[in-house]
Structure formats: structure tokens, C-alpha cells
Length: 313
Image (cartoon, rainbow, N blue to C red; front, side):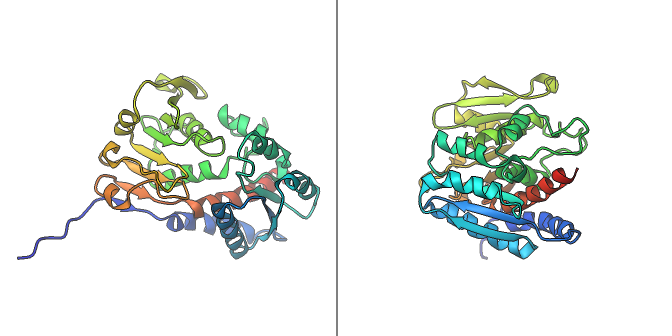
């Protein structure tokens, strides 16, 4: 008698499956427009992952009915001037700059050069300030929604799709009782993501190469926005108490230790590299999303539509 093939309860969910819901919504919205919107991508680095992301963006945008134009800039110091030219081009509805470019504070400066009403990535200071302060609208009348960074937003939408958010709770509190570990604290993704999750009610352990911080709104969610506190726990202790583990380490050599994962945890990786051992984590996780790129692009295009709505409001 042959031995039974071992099984696992882990559900591997692809980004394409999750993105389909949002692309259908985008198609329906586009069908109501009197002309296609135009998105311009600015690429000023030789990072293969950035070029791949740019190509995916263009392919998806065109499939859904947007105009897309990629401008490749041979010298980094020409990027700022190119941003201003596209800002002033009335035929352009949205702009994405493929970061990192310089990989330092100059990138933060360049983010602020993009016109706020064309910033599909949600990196303008006003958007970032709103996000950290848990302010969800640009106006008192709540007619113009603030734009969220597209990769953190993609993770949020993935978690909603997976049922991690508790829809029986009030909007804005639906992660109450959940503990999350985020391994990445970049200013583009990791730190904003930790803030968004904490503002939605979670306790978040934000880990980077130097230390671990805690993001949360306090006991009973008594605070409107999250606070950041020092953490004296190890990554292993944080992870073993976490319902969700999210990784974004841009290194082929990094693998999150499988033995740190709590049984039944939800795993999401937003790095272009696979931070989890695919086979090993299937034996312990309940759900696993190995890549999120297609959802990120959907959120970017969704932001483009929202920018148009804000201009018309």
C-alpha cells in the first residue's frame, strides 16, 4: 500500500487573481470617460526591477484603456527638469517616477517635484502627512479622497481580499486585535505600510536592519492616529505572536526564518525577490501571497482615476 501524499492547508493566492477584481472595476470606470487618461512614467535608473515594473505598468495601462508613455532619462541629473516639463503638459493626467534613483534624500526631494494633482504614487508631502495622521480626505466636505502610496495600498487591498480585515467592525478599526510584523522600513513602502495598518487598528512590529519599532493606536484604539514606540523584543518573538507577516527585503540572499512563523499566519511578500521559502512556508501558513506587483499596478491606475475625480470635485 502506497503512502498518502502529504497535504497542506495553506492557500497560495496569486497577485493576478486578486488584481482581477480591481481591474474589472477600473474597466467599468474607464468606460464612462469621454477620453482616455494619460499616464507618463519616468525611468532614470538601470535597475532591472524598475524597468520590469515600468513595462508591466505600460502593458496593463494600455490593456485597460489608458494612454501610457515611458520616458527613459539617460542621466539622473536630468530627471528634475523632465518632471517639471511633464507637470506642465496639460495632456498628462498622472506621473510615476520609478524609484530609487539616487537612493538617498535626493529621491525624497524629487518626490516633491511631482505636481500633487498628478502624483499617482501618493508621495507628495500632503498625502504622506494625511496618511500618517490618519486623515482620509483632502477637504472638510469629504469629497476629495487623499491618495495613498500604491504599494502599501496594494498590501491593504490584498489583506481585505484575504478576509484579514473584520468587516463587522467600524471602518477604520477593522484590524483591531490583529498583530502584524513588517520586515522593511523604507520611506516608500515599509514605514507607510506600518502606519496604515496601525491606523486601521493593528499592533504592528516594524523591523529593519537596525531595530524594531511598535506602531499602534493604544489600548482600545483610544487614539485617532498611531504612535511609534521602541520595542525590546526579538524578530522571532514578534513574528511568533503575529497573525500576518509582510516582507519586503530587496535581496536574493534573504529568507525569512520559517521557524519564526506562527501556525496559521498569513504571509505577504512585496519584494521583487522571494523572501519566503515557498515549500517550507506552505507547511505552516494559512495563506501566502508570494508577489504583489499586479495589485500594485492596479492601485496605481486606481489612483490615476481618483486624481481625476478630485480635479472635478
